[in-house]
Image (cartoon, rainbow, N blue to C red; front, side, top):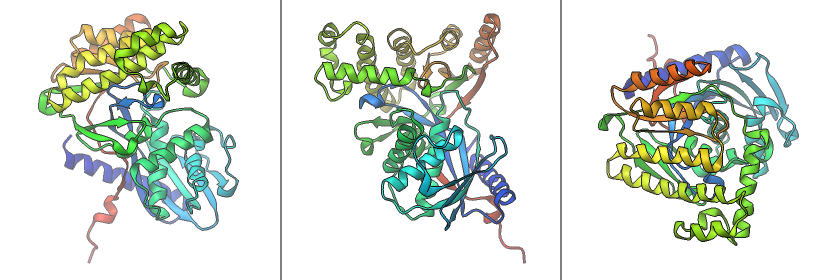
Length: 404
């Protein structure tokens, strides 16, 4: 799909969401915004260790039609929900008080208010094409759509990294998921045709790295294994706590501060249960640096072995893989993929596979056949491209010339 076609599709989607808003709330929204999901090329479980990552935004996005309110009421509706409108008082928002999906957008409003920003109520209608539970950051897309909409609705003029921090604060403190900042930074700050080189310690210093898949005869497949993951179930928090404990034992602010050359010494000094976590984080940071170098050289095909090495580390050291993601990686590689790995927090979700143009059907078919032979549900497979971050959309109806 070329850029013009994509813009046309986005404008039509904006029209659809604005029309649904009118039916739900009466009157037109003040605007329509979009925030994408993401895949992470490399750099998994590094962001909460102040490390490095290399995500890219997906074409799949959460769309939000929004209108400010002067009465302090927050009304939320999702096209993917149960049809009900959730109504809340902004002044009464507090961590743990809003269950389910509504906690993510409500948490952003709470985080903005807690940070001292003069925000009030709003009517919000969401419609998302980001798969949930697939490790593609559907929650961050939801949060970041609210963050960019509120930034404009209330004239806050916050830079992208500040909006990402607000969204992360919502997920950490309001919802209770101790995620790092990578997902929110990718959703807000990515640009089309690039990957985002993120320094989680200093997100403001992020860089855009050219990622020209089509120009180099490559495709990136996202393989949704349809094994749902839940980062709030305690496993993610336990991993983060283990990393923080290891850093404290080593006398470091974070594992990012352990040079790769000192890794062997550090592993000898740590309890056996913590050493694999440290080995993954340190070597994964190094893989991010290598991947960025290869992309800047214009050699995206060289990402293949880096992806595969990253998967082995997540499987063997971090132990966040599962039979379905391991099978998808193995089947993709056996069918000729240049590299493959699970992406996202783990415990299910999606796998990415880097393939030569023309291999998409062969690799996708091999993974599907392997899943069938193992008795798994068929995976969902799509080819994707590096896309734009959060932005305002213009419905087609606003672009038509007036009828005379």
